[in-house]
Image (cartoon, rainbow, N blue to C red; front, top):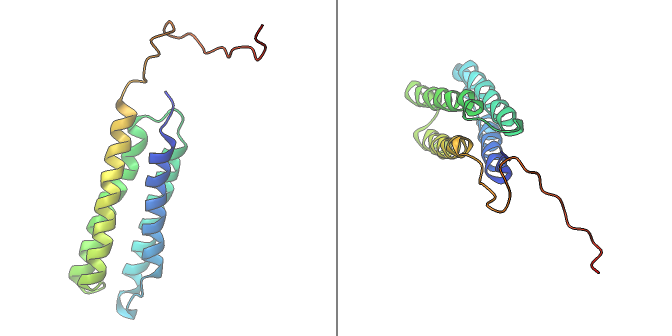
Length: 136
């Protein structure tokens, strides 16, 4: 089964953008360590997405690590908001990005579960043989 390249790439790209947002976030001195942990978690999530994107063929299990990483990042952002490390506005934006990323992850995971489309013109397992360029 071929992986749907664009949806997996877009999902990875959204993870990279979320990680970058965490690195751009100004962290108060008394919450710097918490900010660094969030930055690392965002980077780990982006790396898990890259690994799942590169899996050929993509299996639903390839996305499990990224899904759990997304849930963990969401939880850590919420804790950062409640502890005062993030303002409500910043946290709301980051949480929305996590939710959007989760929706994308669920979609590519479901796509990996679908059986490959069957070519009704060929027998199962038959490979495609291109036509000759010469027509006579």
